[in-house]
Image (cartoon, rainbow, N blue to C red):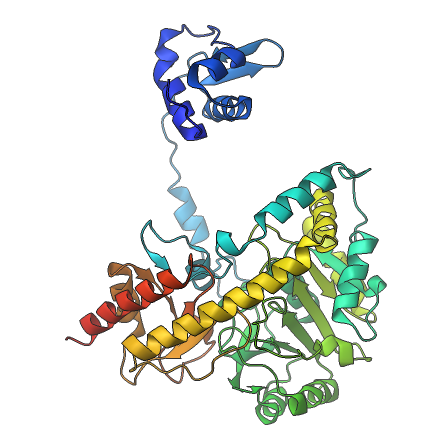
Length: 479
């Protein structure tokens, strides 16, 4: 018989043959299935596990696999209409909203339909992820002594030390907490530093996921404009004075979505302005490891130049690895650290130890620097391919700043363009975009879209995506 390597294929075949066996009847042994279908024992095991998860098969260690007995009759659906009344009750007095708008986040998390070019993605394409290195690290981690035990609540000391060295300056391992990804760390930081109903200063434009966190916590995001050199200190000072805010959230390196890097002369100004306002700066250092090959030396994190504990630092491994490799650092100096720790413990207890052990194995392996060098070169090539394709096929669009790090371009549309219509037309043409409106906490100054060059298969798909975008543009402009 022809060899089959697909778990899904084998599961389909076994599913079709189940009627041959009476309920409770024993299926052929795993060895017999291996020989009959010419597959590996692992494929047989996984196919049977899939059928067991569907409730079609029951597996008994040492005895084999059996056809499951019929399930009890499905109960009629209950009446959940009462929930509409409860969930729609007046929320006007709620300081912390009970309903959360996740639309700005799901745009970059949603997987487009097959055949659609993914210009809306926020993570590396699988071909760019260090899958073999992560798998090897996870395998080694699982064999470490105590790997499946309970970790220290703050995180493994060695991993905290590694993150502290990466931040630099006065930050020590004792001032680092291991968090379950950057989004979780930002959520903890905002809960710790801002009371419901109060303002929080944010860059404009900024990451929609951070705006969603703030609003879900009952905070009022107040925009502070960003230019190609990062946040404008004069407007930041004005915003602190006008609002009385005690928190400013920023991305000083390769800001999302503009790609801006906070200029050297502005770094000290931002810290000074926040210190004089008695405010914290939450530094979201999310893509430091996605630097492009032509970037040159990177500025240190703001936390490295902050002896007074103004900065609460967030750094993550996720963007440089995989969306499922959710390991991050949350660092703070002074009394704020205990508050951060307490909130994180109450919310999530701790990050699973096997994942922390795997992170240590990964970043300590020779494969890690090789991976970073490879994606540095690949991201530059993809960025250049996208900017070149846009210049050739869509000269009407403007790229105000070409970044030397990160994974996307922030593209301004001509005045009068309906970005919602363009996004819909693009999807009809087979390319998914991230519209610009969710990146603004107030009225946007112009229409934008964000185009990711990291979530696609390669430069060929980038070129094809831009050609499809040209067709969508012509549709919207009526040509």
